Image 1 (tube, rainbow, N blue to C red):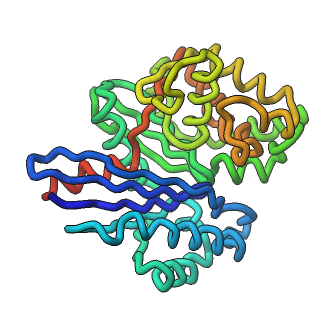
Image 2 (tube, rainbow, N blue to C red; image 1 turned 180 degrees about the vertical axis):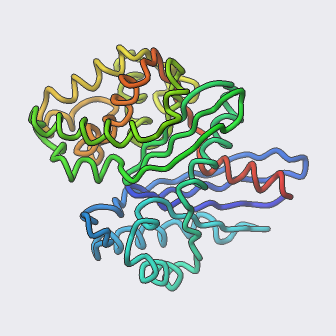
Length: 306
């Protein structure tokens, strides 16, 4: 048996998951921790990681070490996604992380991130045809799954944090700002030619903003085990109703909505906007949530190679 610790440095949060890998090819998650560090905050069009955001993220990474460093037969794999991938000062940041934590972060390309999402989600959900959407803080990954295979995939450089900052979607949202954000998204999504092949398919959802959408609806429906969202479904109408509810209230009221984490309330509208836009463009009638994504995809690849 081996212990595999995956440290996943996202644009809005840092996650660590420890899995026991068994000799028969199965695995079991034994620990999972999350810290909100918002690494992509304030990057702006210059794509510069800001000092405070880097400090917060490194502090979170250091806080994870006691949870895995004493485990026997340990492998640690650190990955970084959109914020680090896009940053002009990423080399400086990666050196600081290595010096502080002894973790050599692997910066995933957008295509790698999308492919690992596909491996992690489709293997667990057993769905043959869908469009997979992973909405992160600084990017969205899209995968057209056809007959269970990844027919096409792409990573686009907008997500919950940078959309919220660019179009002022954090507090009371004006009609002008919402319209500008929707035009921006439609123009960029329409450039992805193969999205036409995904019309009328269900959307499989990953990422923090999408998990929050699931939690809010499960709370509202008074479903037990609010965090247990794997395989949970919503109609497009339910998604739109939730989005409208968020748009109607300012930030201070949004923070009180059950199921919505306080520290995510200022980016939830920006985080839901790619989903809302895709549902309209593709005329999809439902969404399905996946708890499995990049980390589970990495585990699947590691086990198959071993």
